[in-house]
Structures are given as structure tokens and as C-alpha cells.
Amino acid sequence: MQSKIQNLLKDKKSVIIFGVDGVLARMEFGEHTHSINDEETWDKLIESGIELYQDVRPFKTMQNFLKGKNMDNIYVITKVTNNKEFLQKLSFLKSNYNIKEDNCYMVFKDKDKLLLIDEIKEKYPDLDDKYIIFVEDSIDTLNYVMLNSEYSTMHISSFLE
Image (cartoon, rainbow, N blue to C red; front, side, top):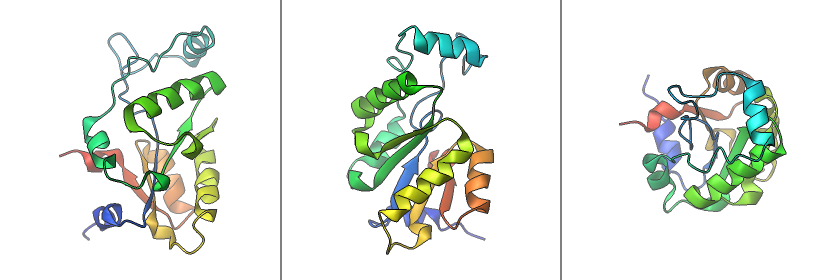
């Protein structure tokens, strides 16, 4: 079966919700690895005030995709460990993607992303659920949304050429 998700992405009425890490932000936090390997170290770095997202590179493909989009219909839901991390991500999103701060949400557990997608959907009561598109890198999170809603789901790899 041929996927029709690309057609939905092009539709002006679609609402697109992105994750951050691995979706809009490259995962390049470890010296020779994609990430810092334990949450305790990550939490300490965030709490100490180190700007972990200051040097994170955005994806040019995603920047180009968002050019010309109605930014009122672009949202972000990101998992964080605390509010300081969320503020760092907001700064990254604003400077690299011009995503509206009011359209950015944080969760502490990936499964809570669906609750926020539901809240976003309430802003568009006449929009068919399939036009709510969730773009993420975590298969587990995508599967959870897919199995518990009628929203469209898309893995970030679909943007790769």
C-alpha cells in the first residue's frame, strides 16, 4: 500500500506536530556518541546552567520544509527532564525554526505526548483527525499514538532523501 502521508503534509489545513531531539535537533551530545549516556549526568548539566542546545545543529531539510508553512499550524511537543531544559529547547526552536513559543509544549513522559496532541486537536474541532500529523523519531511513541488515536503519524526518516 502506498503511503498518503506526503499528500497530507502538503495540505494547507494540516496541523503538524514535531518532536525535538532527533527530529528538529541533531542528537550530538556525547563526545563520540549521539547522547550523554545517563540521565543523572544530563540532569546535572542542565541544572548547572550549561546551555546544551546552544551548539546543537538544526536540520536544513526541516528548515526548508517549514519555509512557507503557516506557523500557526506548526507545533512542538518535547520530552524534558525539567523546565530549564524546556527553556533551552525553546531558544533553539526560536532561533532555528521560528516556531511560536505558544505552540511548544513539554512532557516528562513520552506517552503524555498523546494527551497534548488531543489538546491541540481541540483547537481545530472541524478538522478530520488524519490532518493532525505527528512527526517523531521514537517508534514506540509513534506506535502508541497510532494505536490510541486516529491521528496521522510519520517517522522523521520520511524526510530523508
